[in-house]
Image 1: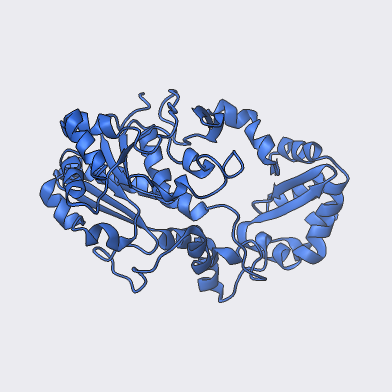
Image 2: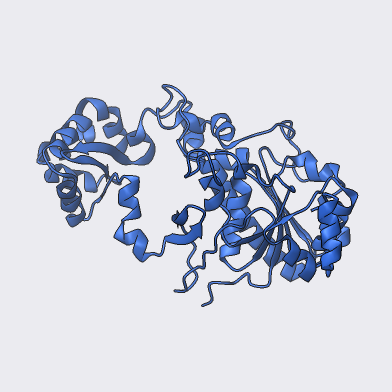
Length: 398
């Protein structure tokens, strides 16, 4: 099976930060031609924000890891000629992909209703903080949002501490998952367009997706009327424990496995204790009884010994790995989960596409420099001459 199911699909992307670029990158991995439209001389905000590999100089790493396999065209959408050229690009595109504030393209007259008149088969995909109001209108639609705002408002920040104090999860998980869901929405829209021949609208909200990520805690609150007291109550897992040389995570996923686990840790009497016979009872006595028993056992063994013994008994366990261990993990490397490409820093390694189609490997071209493909795209797609392109560059249109 080919790893390029979207070959021949053209995406015009007006995107910045993480959620939009990450989602369109997954589609580019699958062979779609993704043409980024960026502001002349400025580009995506992530080209100048965030950690770089050269002590404050060079392109930030977040931009590099979200934009492989794409093209970059600089175009001033605030100019009349720039908007006209943008519309010309939309005429033959399959997808408009954007994650600007909801009023930006709409304010330029480039909303879904306007563009589907120009291209009756266009798929208009939007990612924003709280969603657009042309499909489902909410009172917060005009608010700006970032990943950590969505995490906070959805309740995700209470998860790591189970209500003691709010804490950011430490990575832009809402941005990333929203990008993935937007890509999934586009795939569904492509299928529907193939069936009906009509334009499609796709609308993703960071806040909506963050609520989905917190769905188990929200459901627990709705059913019980209270917040969960700890991971053991929330997830059927015992949790994280310290071995003699690091940390491990252990899961006891049902009541049948509990006596076997107690045998493994040398505490068979706990497996026969009626006060620990169910998940709820073990959650109730986790801090007082269960955790001290498991702590004592894991502390006396290496992580490899703990995990090895439990796996041999058919139980769930694993090491808590560092980033360095993840990079060197034989499982992830065998699964082709790391891609390498050349940048101004030399060759860098990034996490690859987890969606496997057949056994072919995904290509990985370096993210485009600002405006790298402007002349190529305007010449090939809009049939403009070099002289016309030069004049527009002089006028600040591109």
